[in-house]
Length: 280
Image 1 (cartoon, helix red, strand yellow):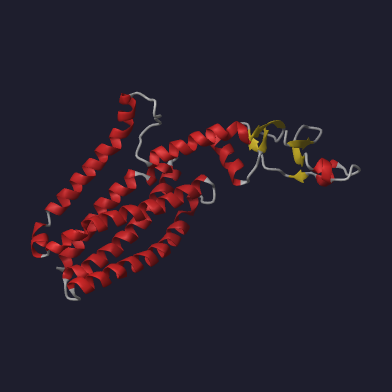
Image 2: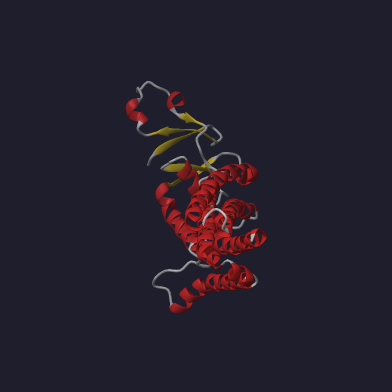
């Protein structure tokens, strides 16, 4: 037992009285003088996910449960929801890792295969899409073969930036520090962060290519401009997608996995080759 809950004559929850106050408060004190009024509570029809988030957000060891008119009907302790919290964390981690369903190490081979294969196939199709994009720019590679050296840089940076942005948003949505209605505010904030990161990264690459290829070489400025555009797009896309999924009542953890990486790879490569062709 962690708390004594204070109710009125109608059974409605009015406050909470921590047991430690029985020691620290004078014996002549009335409960109403030492109780904590308007305590956090959950409704009987609240989802387990909501209970877990409330307990984690306010660092509680127990929370009272009330009915539709505020009458106390029970309590839920942190031990009661710990298993659910672990299961939720595991589920989100698996979604972010590209697993389409919950699997364990002792599951049968067929189940583990079916959980992994969908995103692997999608990733394969994304790779084929990238190869088709590159195939349309054979002339550019013939004229500027050094452009091929930066394909991994463009793809890898876009995927990493998008994953970082989506992970921050998903975490904020999970702990209620961010609301799905704050999409424009979060996109605006992410735009500033992306602008700073894109500027720093593109300038570093520009200086490297300036020393290696010279200031007049197409690769010197085309890679930097492309990288800037890719970082900006990946940051905003990684922010917008999980916020949209949350509005649609779809688990936003999906957005931290292969979906963001694959999409950013394709769009990033398209931006890279299109910008290079325009500047060549």
